[in-house]
Length: 371
Ligand code: SAH
Image (cartoon, rainbow, N blue to C red; front, side, top):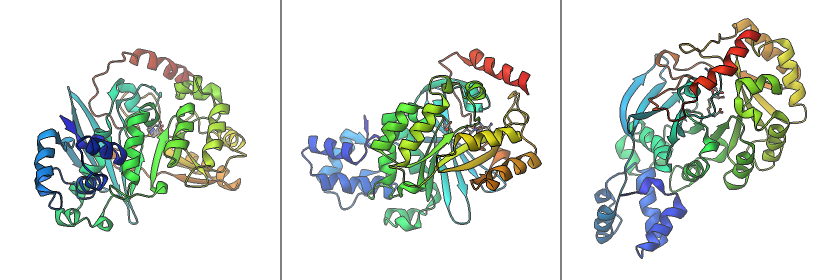
């Protein structure tokens, strides 16, 4: 049966047109679903009763099924959501004084096999649907916002103020479903977030960065992790397909449409691998003509990773080199690591179909030799 969470505004309007219903009906239902967190057509009091009955026959609003819910000592909360056939994904809510950030997954597992990422180690099963992606925000809002405020459409009460597509998976490898979900995040009849508060993080799929710029130019974060192709080829294997000069050029093109006047670069700090003074200087050279902000992520370990987190003096020194050159560089605070909710620790349950885990171990070994 059709799940209405799969539609963005345009898709829902078209589907309603097929029922002979006007666009404003689609808008009403969209508001009930997303602003109200409603999954029961019977509750949609301003929708004509005949239409409500018809909707109940032909469609459903099917959110994700939570099978795990853990809260870290720092208040970070992680849900494990069942997506069928033995697969489950993770969504993380990170509360801070001035905002609440939801970290959303876009795939069951990931095919990119970055050497230092737990999700990458698990292999890949499938793309998430739009309903499964937006369903994570839908679910978090329902759980975190009092029911009455939600149903009254009191959007300002909303606890999730920012969304980052930094959970399991590579968002730009699931382009269509991700863009429809992004449109819902930005839509005033749905979540109404500004483009600056929605961030897509990518390992660097160059053609898709260009498409995103045209179709849904939200804030962009690029997982860099190395300033030279030889090292990046091993840490982030997609670099072999889209090497750094091409990636940097795509970032420059993106800036023209970006909601912020810089690109964020994520950089996991791996002890003895990419954290030397020379690496920091290479980063400065690489991004010299590109307004950038660096987000240094002390590596979050997981069993069998083969990497160690850079020591904090090393991270500080690395950060200082960037700051001294006038580049904004922050160190990402580790959140939720006691419930394995930190960057790179999300694993969910993935029935791997790619069977390329053995291959993924290859670049890792050579990295260890270098370290
Ligand atoms: N595939 C996308 C979305 C994942 S975002 C991307 O690569 O950007 C998750 C971020 O955490 C990425 O920057 C990723 O490189 C980083 N990361 C992965 N494993 C990590 C680990 N073990 N420790 C710290 N950061 C990690």
